Image 1 (cartoon, one colour):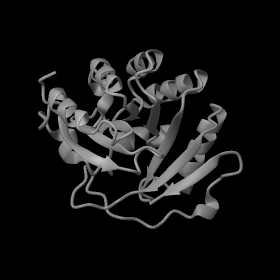
Image 2 (cartoon, rainbow, N blue to C red; image 1 turned 45 degrees about the vertical axis):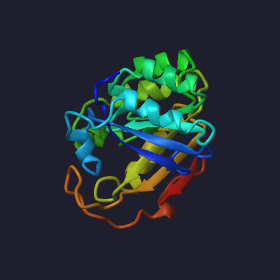
Image 3 (cartoon, rainbow, N blue to C red; image 1 turned 45 degrees about the horizontal axis):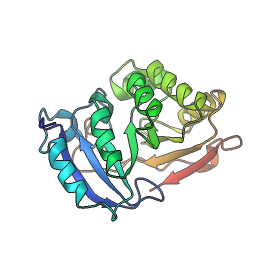
Image 4 (cartoon, rainbow, N blue to C red; image 1 turned 180 degrees about the vertical axis):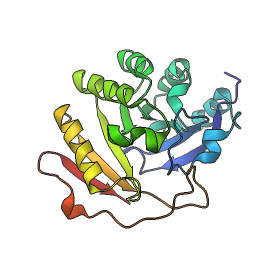
Length: 225
């Protein structure tokens, strides 16, 4: 509990967990190296700035003021979240997990024990571009996690960050077809790449996606930023 696995925390947000006044806990490290990732400082750091105990002290001051805690990163699912989540629940907060979907065992553990209320999975790319964009071969692991959450009828969302130099309309439609075949019924969020001072792939801003070319006949699509 004293190990410093948390890079930073955002004290208040109304946008990251829809309908909930939340704070965000940013965990260090990630098992992906997404080209467009602008949290490269969090991904590459070997030690955070805060321990679980320090975060609990902050959360105690927010009882009655916040509704929820968002576990993000980096990749939060690389860490043992069970005890941390239990203590957050004991304080009366809801929990949202932001994840790349590669740790199905942790997702099963948290959902089985009612230690998470909502999950957002970053669906990075179609299978044929997954390794190029994430520098991993974990596509099948992500699909298994999506299948599991659909099977247990858990409340979750899928979202994709778009830089058209990496993912174009054809790629997005391929991903829509994939999750449609999995019988995903939730909202599929498409969010624009945000250019910052640095990112893992030194990616620059690209043209906007042509929304008229996106297949939204059988799936609810919403655009963010």
